[in-house]
Length: 626
Image (tube, rainbow, N blue to C red; front, top):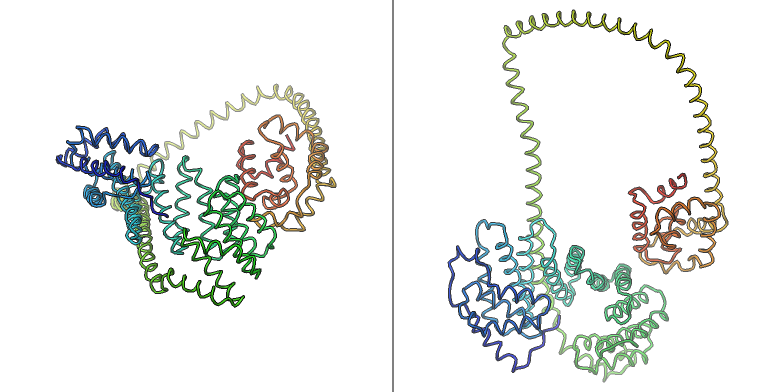
């Protein structure tokens, strides 16, 4: 991630004065600190910062010039220093209160060192402030090119937040904060070609987006970063899938991320052997919409790479040389030099080749330095993951112990009760007396039972006499009911035969037999790239034939589903027809030329509208009988 640009020098005079004014002057006893909380003025500025950082910075300046700033206690003094750093960062200015910020980091860590903190608003607030302090301190280290220290602070911020969240998923500001922290780590790891840690950060950032609705707009960008990591790993098919998800989520050529995804996917298409003409056409189209010099040179580089691989040296030099001559972007200039060296070697242009070699020698770190640097970051990330897994394992053990205790304790109680009962029954004399008493009660019970049985028999004989007259009348009613039941069953059988014949006629319609035949023959399996099956796609005329077929053979089904579920669109009805033919999501994706995920979403949407949890095929077949 690029360093934040500095504010004008004049604007920093009052920032320095602001920092002096906000230094803590009065200490408040610790036992009252958690009750009182931060000042209302600072809390209001903090809240505004998340929406309008420029306005929040102006309000903080006004507050620090007011009399209230002179009476800040220790907590509010450090809180104010944290807000200064965050607002400088959010307003694209370099940190100028590093010493005060480091003191704030230590302070917020210290107030978290309570053996058993009481859960509540004050605890939640202090944890969030401690995490923010580590995050913004990491941003400061990064601005001073101390990447290892920056990584350590970002990971510490995550550890603090995860301790606070325990087993809960992040939501609200927690999710937003953790999303930006994972993004900082993602950028850092990606720059050092640490793809696996970067992919982990992408996955965690995506989980934050799914938990917090306000972050949903960030999902396509996260997919793009995920694709970039798999691209670097050489796993082109997975990279193309995530680029495709990015494109599907944005679908706006005016969006720079959309143009980046289109260009990188086009390069992947070329690299997996899908030809050269279409990828070049796509990248040139994105080039025509470039709105900055950096983006234009990035597109030049992508085209230059393709021409280098194709050994079209003149074309490669045309696109790569302007990048090498531009000194504003050292990273892109270095990449261009590597490919120019290949082309100059092929043309035996020794002078130009030596120039590229000198440049690469001056600007690329030695392999040993790079390995040592990456090794530190990998050790740090591995330690974070190990601690995270250790905590999860401990939680799993505690859960298993609780579950075992829930089983063992009742069993132990039962065993004790059995022992007590057996001990009581060990007295033979008591057992004999109990047996005699039981025999006596049993005799009395048998006598009462015989008397009751005789009374029941007498009652039964009287009921038999009363029922004999009613039985004759009921026989005639039973014969009438039987006739009506036979007539009803005959009508139902005729109806079911009609439904079966209608469905048989539908699946034997020429267009239906064609669709089923293509699906069985092609065996569509790809869930990532439906475009490779475009030759098997249904034409508009075939779709119209399908709609006519279902209207012709299953008119009652069509009218029923239209009447009961008016929210279903024509496209939803087409999907229902294909499902009735036995096609799965992969078949429909290929033949309708829609992304697999889009087809799955549509199937879930139809099931949701109909209100069923069963398979869509069986639900629709059952509707034929309604």
